[in-house]
Amino acid sequence: MATFVELSTKAQMPIVALSTWKTPPGKVKEAVMAAIDAGYCHIDCAYTYQNENEGLQDRKELIPRYDKGNILPSKATFLDAWEVMGKLVDEGLVKALGVSNFNHLQNEKLLNKPGLKYKPVTNQVECHPYLTQDKLIQYCHSKGSHCLQPSGHSR
Image (cartoon, rainbow, N blue to C red; front, side):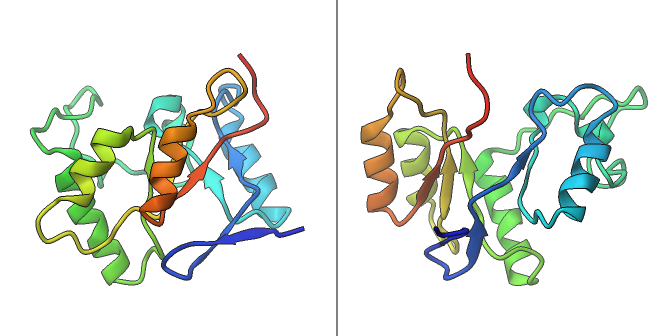
């Protein structure tokens, strides 16, 4: 059984990842450390999980905030963010870039960005028997992007 998937960039991404979604408050750091100790090298975390303040690194210096700690609003778009993230690939800090919950139109907007240097190699989407997303998955595959479906939770 394969333990990784080869991305279009030839980078290898582990199939099994630790998700921090719905991790009880105060347990994220402990869970991440245990996963790293067990050999995990794929950690799934996101702003929408609302537990990023428990992360391993203090990111206050990386994200502009108000004095009260709220993230500053910005007129930057996901296209602006993508361009900046591409610099991480250029610097060798990350091997590939992906997106999460992008629909067909969002993918097209990114893929048609003038001067696009790096295509998304993954799109993590909700997918289960009640929401198969066959067309989106086929579309992503046709563009050289793997679709990831989180597992281990139910509705």
